[in-house]
Image 1 (cartoon, helix red, strand yellow):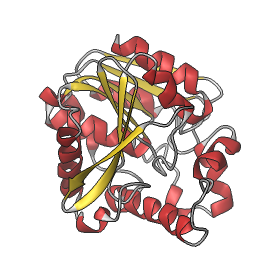
Image 2: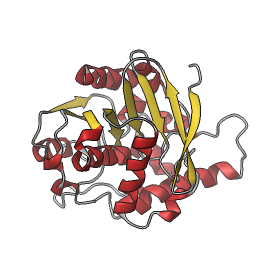
Image 3: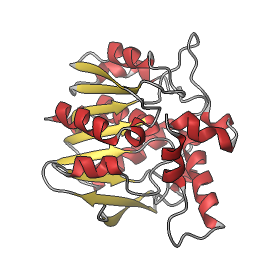
Length: 260
């Protein structure tokens, strides 16, 4: 895989990394739990026909430490709005996964003119007491890979220290990413998003890994039922919570087919 172009945008005085690769209409991607310590095959598949723009959220790998300045869910939403604006994604298609999926849905609900079409991959934001979500922050480190991916090796490859990484700083950076997500989605990813889903006007695709161990696949129907606009649900076989790591080509094909 060739390397993407790397730039930064400033959010609340902190730099956030932005990756850009490909050509064609703009497509933004907000990553899932753990962020994106490295460029992944899923993004390459999207970049074959789109200009893929991948901003790092505050606190995530490449996102500096700006998460400590965000004290409420509203703070996070306004920070994501800044990122969308400053990366030129306003009015473009938006894809979000896991924690990033919740933010993508919020952008489409609160700022409908900012999102042309929307694709959500197992987004956070809802909680059903009858089928509770797993708590990724309460897991032992050795349990996380199998929780995030159907094939644990895909998670392990994502979070492995890149070449040249400082052996002391790298674990701290990954812990910071988990802390950032916890600040935004505690407890259990429940942000009462169901109250805002009816505001989404963008045509929406909801994708779910068949083997998701974080959010039961039944949550896909809950999301689709909450969105008033044109919504379609698709299940990805042999994929876990971060389906784009387990099945990059299948997820990219579904996303690009929806976005047109």
